[in-house]
Amino acid sequence: MKKRLISLALSAALVGTMLTGCTGNEGGQNPAPVDNGGAEATQAPDAGGETATSAPVAEGGKTIGIAMPTQSLERWNRDGSYLKEKFEEKGYTVQLTYSDNKIDQQVKDIEGLIADNVDLLVIAAIDGESLTQVLGDAKSNNIPVISYDRLIMGTDAISYYVSFDNYTVGKLQGQFVESSLDLANAGDKTYNIEFTAGDPADNNAGFFFNGAYDVLKPYIDKGTLVVPSGQTTFEKVATAQWDTANAMERMQNILGSYYSDGTQLDVALCSNDSTALGVTQAIGTDYAGSNTVLITGQDGDVANLANIVDGKQTMTVYKAVANEAVATIDLGVAILNGETPDASLIDNAGWSFDCAYDTSSYDNGTGVIPSYLLVPTVVTKDNIQKELVDTGYYTLDSNGYPQAN
Ligand code: BGC
Image (cartoon, rainbow, N blue to C red; front, side, top):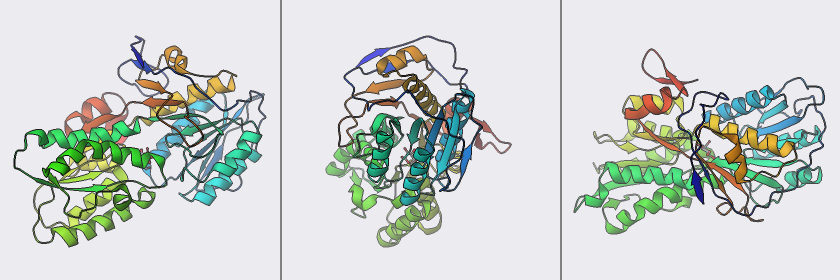
């Protein structure tokens, strides 16, 4: 891996972002074949999910098919609209689908995009294992596929993966707990912790959980951290569909079974904000204790940022989806121009955010998928202004709560 800093003016592409710097991890890559031909398409997919939108086709223009999982989890609305807006600004037509977190619906939506002859597919999968057949069709039709944020497994139709460093997201959560409680110097003091992880169908979820657990496991082994429920495996702590209500119900059960006798809960390690929201609700209604529970999250969802301002959630790991979209767009444009992007995409793009080109970490079962990995940031009440407001991602409303720009 080699690291370099590139000085440049702040990107005009999206909202104002912060420092400049790119990390390139050069190595071999094995992208799926790219067809530079491409046909026009004018219609939104007819097997629509929650929404399907399209813009008029530019003469000779190419079409990008974007398949997002659901509008019910906040971040995907931001991803979908950034990607659509920015691809359109570059003169592409965009077909955007949301599939209501229904696997069959997403397969149908992608079939529709292929039938409409899109030139490039950008897909955030609901279930990383369920797209093998439909993406076989994409490959037969020479449509390159960018796996967006979540790695799509078991298909060689994927050209590239764009995401944040998912293991680091979990690691940041674990390290936050470690340093906040000063676990290394805890002596005989013990703390009670419960884990809530994400959707087993999402390849990211295991990375997040492992990143956090690997930091905290030595303290569990030592007895500094105690898990009264005994639930410490990913399978036990996973949350189907990352659903807030599922996370809430599970935490209510845990509180009822293991904490109703006055046992103090110190930490609720939650992999993301939608689960943190449910856990916070459960603690609000069903926890007998009066201490402030340290609650982690990820994404910077508006409701969670309000909870952070109010002291109900302690931190979130923020991932600037605007930057993820910029990387995806520059990658997509390079692919459509017939290039075979590698680390040099980062060198040449002049992005105003850190990004690593990784050719070893993400094997989808058919081989390693070349990946562009962005860098997440810890956000707490103390740095909301600096990390989210001063950077232009959010504005504070009249009550001091961050609203996404
Ligand atoms: C994303 C997270 C998100 C979760 C639920 C994951 O794949 O990386 O940012 O919180 O899905 O939407």
